[in-house]
Length: 182
Length: 304
Image (cartoon, rainbow over all chains, first blue to last red; front, side, top):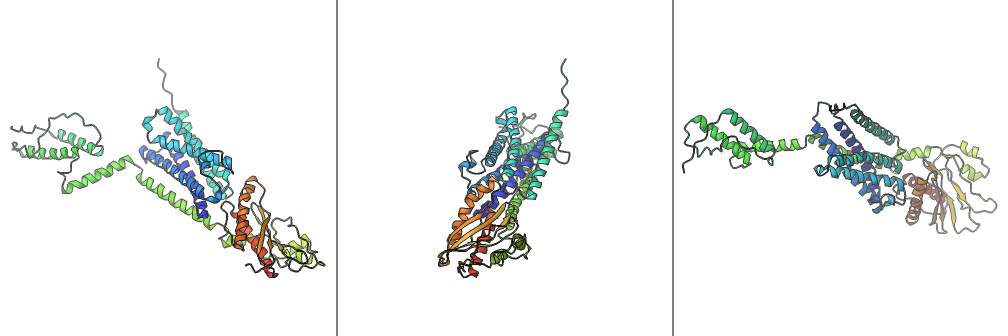
């Protein structure tokens, strides 16, 4: 039983990370208006929302299987409070913080109209930090960090996320300013 | 009270009402705009109009009005299919990426299951190929060092490769004071494996056997087993565990006691893998099995 939880914990964590990175990429491309003409912007936004929700669901599955795996020694409290784990304190803390950021981002996106656009944007951008922390968490935990395939996948994820972030940032910088009123 | 005849309407009015009805069907909560035309009496009541064109128009408007109110009383037979397609359109409008959503969900679930299966299969305890590779990975005949007592590390490394079981022929069951067999320290070569026997006192009550050294990518693993006079396992401890980084130390701090207690309770090398300490668990099992095999060969124990 513990072995099954151990395998599921690792696999759900990896899939959650991939989904989070994919959601991030979709969001960057959508907000940069680099969605092409083949699909409507609504399609990109819809899939972005869905990927973010799925990432949160798989993150929760990752937490549950980690706690259910008794041999891992991860207490329930340590998945809610960062920095109190007996082992791998720092790595687990990054994961807990990333989970909170994911959850905040996803849950504030549903009642988006309740917040001002500025507030929503700040909260939404925190998911970028969350994805970065999740990747660091996966690497520092070290369960699969020694596997070449894992390292390669992480490299691809970082590269893809950075590329889309660059597209977004360059789009912001290249945006023509409104002419000042005389 | 006499019913007023239906007001005259042109084709533009009909198209406009059709458009309104379509929008209404897509979004029932949408507020209705102010009508530009006067309310129309149902066709059944507008019998005063004798013009067939006006009657057809009135019937059509009645149908549109029913659609606007969402009532299905008038939609019999073929009218149900437009209602279904409207619902489908509404769902599609709400989730334009419905297909991609399903694909993402399916792919995620399949990936999770596939990765979990991959982890389970790649576990060395279940993969014969990996187990064979770890055995071949550089073991030397430690028996030469133990048996002749004069073997040098060079001689040991020159010996042909063999399995740990075959490489552990000497046991502490021949306790002669004349030929004491000193415990041989693990060779500096991390790839080597050897079984060392600590010879007990002349009248042995307990026999201590050192298992083979197994190397994995985190470090070496070697166990020491103490057999009682009746041949049972009375103590198992580790002589070497991975220690290069703090993580390995932390893992083995909780994994080794579990493995030791499991081995003692099982009285064999059939111990479960401790999650998070897969490599240590596997090499622990192998080292323990080599020690047991060595003791069995010498008649110290009957433990399998």
